[in-house]
Amino acid sequence: MRPVTATAAAVTTLLGLGAAAVVAGRYASDAALGVPSGRPFPGEPRLTVHGSGPERISLTRSLAALRPGTYGIEADGLHAVVGPVLDRVPHTADTVVRRLERVELGTLAPGVRVRLTPQLHCGTPETALGLPYEDVEIPGELGNLPAWLVPGPRTTWVIALHGLGTTREHALNLVPFLHRRRVPVLVPAYRGDAGAPEAADGLGHLGDSEWRDLDAAIRYAVRRGATGVVLLGWGTGAAMALHAAESSGVRDRIRGLVLDSPVLDWEATLRNLAAAHRVPAPLIPLAVRAAQGRTGAHGDRLQEAADPHGLRVPTLLFHGPDDTLAPWDRSRRLAELRPELVTLSTVRDAPHAAMWNADPVRYEESLRRFLTPLV
Image (tube, rainbow, N blue to C red; front, side, top):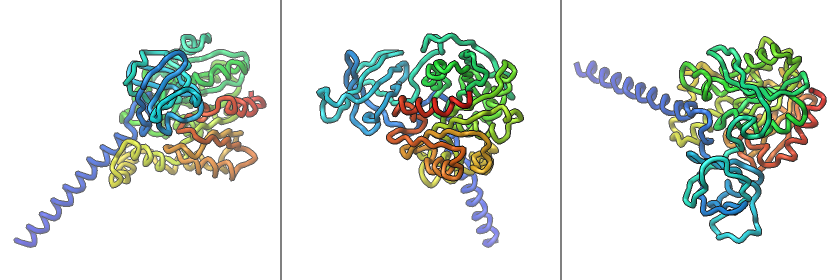
């Protein structure tokens, strides 16, 4: 009986380890993919407000606080906008003074802990920007999707898609620029967003299933009179745009793609998300396998959608080497392999999905040149 007992013990141990691995994988995949939209980017450092006054704010000194450009800062019940670093303003060695553009929500009291966000605005196109808009509902695969439609006289529309760590309010950064170009802008929510249907598993799929909500948005735009669309996406929104350009039944209406910090490598981004959420390194491979099993998403589908040789429409890429979530080297490779169709605008000193924030003037000029022949 001893060999049998030993074998049984070994099997029990293996089953126990297997069960533990399953549990660990689910935990790690939840950490990577289970964060609701609008939550801060994983890994973004928290900064302490040391003081604020007319048109200036003092923050904890760090590489994040020293980033060039314009950013939102947020905490529970708080949203404000900060501009460039004010080097010549007196400050202590452990603080950074930036221009305070405005406080949209809450109070900037000393000691408040905040995070930077690329999302500048709170509210609707009307309350945040003073622009007329229409609340619309897009019939989607899982139910109706709320969306904002900012009208314009042109017949080519821009459909703007937020990504990780933001909401559709992120698109409001660019709506004034697009409105000046007289381009209609459709800003949809998609599965998992506030007001939109939940995914069946409660997880984000990094664009692998969400793109079908974009397909519904394109069809809606066509029904409303759009003769063509330009898809503008950040992060997973950019991945959605690539999936739609590859697989949508109305992809012939897509005139161009604008991809900001695009997720071009599903597994690499999942690993980076897990690491940013402080998932222990030994669990990260389990997170990838668990996420694939739970979502049905696999990197090969995104590789097909992002295949440089499969691109059919002009594509503008905004990306840079400081993106720690979506690898920049994939964007470089895409641009190198299809130089006649893909333009890469490299932005340094900008985290994921914050390419506009780092240099709005340069970003909008690149976007103007790209859009002019398309709209």
